[in-house]
Structure formats: C-alpha cells, structure tokens
Image (cartoon, rainbow, N blue to C red; front, side, top):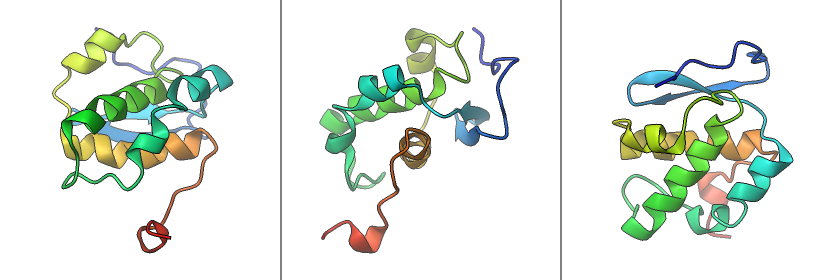
Length: 113
C-alpha cells in the first residue's frame, strides 16, 4: 500500500488532512476530479459527525478519496476504504476537499439560509 504523497506534489498548494491517524494531502482538484464528486457534494450539505447517516457516509468517503487522488495517485479506492478512518476525520476533511475544488466553505451560521 502506497500512502506516500507524489514526489512532485506542490506542497505549497496542497492542504493537509488527518485520516487514519496520519497526515495526507489534498492538492487542488483537477476538472476530472471535480466532475467525479459533483453529484455527491449537494448530499453532504450541513454534515457533521453527529448527523451522519449511512446514506451520507458512502458519498462522504467517495468525495474524500477523490480529493486525495492528485496528491496520492498510488492510493487505490480499495486501500483507502480499508484504512481505519474515523467519521470525525472524514467530516473534517470534507471542507478541505471542497475548497481545493474551488468551492467555498459555508459557515455554520449561514447554513440554514
């Protein structure tokens, strides 16, 4: 299993996330990656570790995995899904992936508007 980041990764543009107790990077997403997560993202609005349901967990994991792909190209989906990642780690990584896709973080006070 290769969890190491790409040797050519521009770490200045990447953001760190903690998953399975270790540091990973989320680089700016490519258009292909943005398209891969586009249908999942609306389903994850307002998600927290406390309100996460089974039907939202799989899309959340998919979005985070796609977010890691540019910085960790050798990490397969199967390897990622076998990591001991916590729900809290997935939820914390989501805004980083959205921001690296060019999206804006919705502040908690504006989420209900």
